[in-house]
Image (cartoon, rainbow, N blue to C red):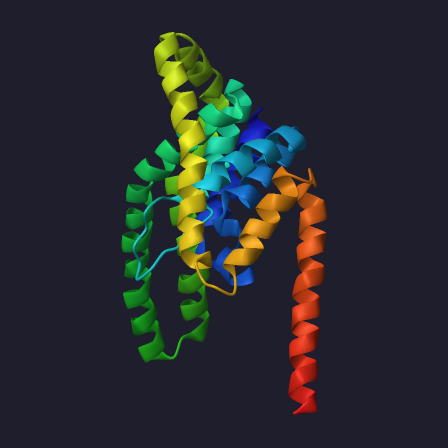
Amino acid sequence: MIVQAIGVALIATISTWWFSHVITRTWLYPIWSGFLVGIVMGKPMEGMMLAAAINLPYVGFITAGGSMPGNAMFAGSVGTALGLVSGLPADQATTIGVILGSVAVMMWNAYMSINSLWIHMADKAAERGDLGMIRFLNYVPSFFVSLILNGIPAFLIVTKGAIVGEWLSSMPAWVIEGFALVGGILPALGIGMLLNYLGQKKILPFFFLGFFLAKFMGLSTMAITVFGAIIAFLIYFFQNTKKEVR
């Protein structure tokens, strides 16, 4: 369990650490960080299902101008870990994950505020022409700040998560049912946010096409993904063909 807890702590740390987002933005979303947590904890399929459920409320997630409506990085990694350790179903894990993400906004603000200190130190290093120190201040301190703010809580949740499961089990049935109800509503909120971006005449038909293929034709997500990729390729190909003809 200690090794798994350390692995989850590193995933939670790297998910928030800015350098990992330079490599790929997928660290921002629970579906990736939660999937990695599932692998580390030896339950990849369960972790993937929990991560996908937690990701739905954040499917339209965007940080504009530094505004952070929820800490999706913490919700994905720690929420999935808590769900696996406590044996929570997907709907309850979604609720707990979003609650954790909302509370962890303060941790994100603290992370950004503390990291501003290294900027001033890097400015002084730049005045001295010390490029090595500039690189050090950009990469190393921010990692350890994320480790303290995100990694250590993730470690404790994995090692003490069973206690949380017992605590939830001792709750009245109506509270558990409330968690399940909220967990069922939250994905609709994420889909609604996504529709704000897709609400364009050229894009919206594809959304309803995917819904039709899944609901009425019973196609799997993978089949719809391949079908959508083919349509995207054909649109791209014919647009380029028109440009060449002109």
